[in-house]
Length: 378
Image 1 (cartoon, rainbow, N blue to C red):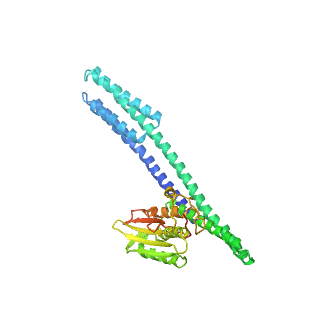
Image 2 (spheres, rainbow, N blue to C red):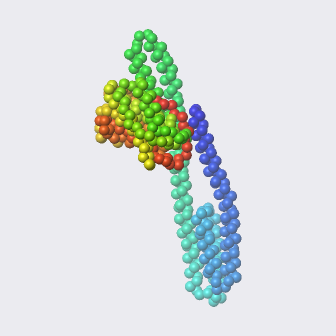
């Protein structure tokens, strides 16, 4: 089990503890509120008895307080009915005595069924609302548990895949010395693909779980130049630069580097020797944009909406088949930073990817994930 899994369990346990603490606080406050309500209602009843001719004013305050408090407390059904009967009987007795003694008119007796009826209506609506809220909470708990199981499976599967990949690579590299190089190269490419798949699955699981990025003030233009230099040293493409100073943004440079590697690797897969790949960045008052353009075949307009779907890809002409997770992971990185990642046709004839980061970044809880870089595919 990974350290991340333990960390998430601790966070989940902490959330449950906080929720339990708040529930206990409400449970402790409940009897206090009930006692205060009982004292207030008793005081109103005594005022009804002690104020002949003006008893309707405390009578209304009595039922008003009972109705308001019940809207927040929602007592069990039988105690609620007993309280309603007791209050109706005691207040009705006082009003009936006043009518019998000719202190108030007979019309005042209309209040006796009216106010309890309003209280019963409040009881009905409050209980329906409480039942609906409990149902929503149960559904939310089930959904949360399902997401936790899915994320845990992805994390564990990603880690489990890496061990046999490492072992298989070691044996294949030894077998390469026996003269079966073509078959070994094919097997090694497939292992590289599996390794990229496990890396991307783990990265997506980390992003989906809302783990913390480690934001530091970073010169975006310098970061793009550094990443471009790493790629130009090992790939025979025609590399173009279109950068302008951007200043510093509070980003996680490791995650942004991972996203840009995915975009550049995608451009490399869909271009051949001598084709061009252009890396650019622009600065505006509201945002900084990073662009990756290629002169490859591009993509059909009908397929454009599916570019960022997980496990969606098409076979490149100049590179190996990808895992279908590189571009979705890059978009997840952009969204984790409060930005966007879009795809469109490039002026160079192929594809253009635009990674946009807002300036300043929204106030999002800092993230602290250290990803392991890997290849990216469309």
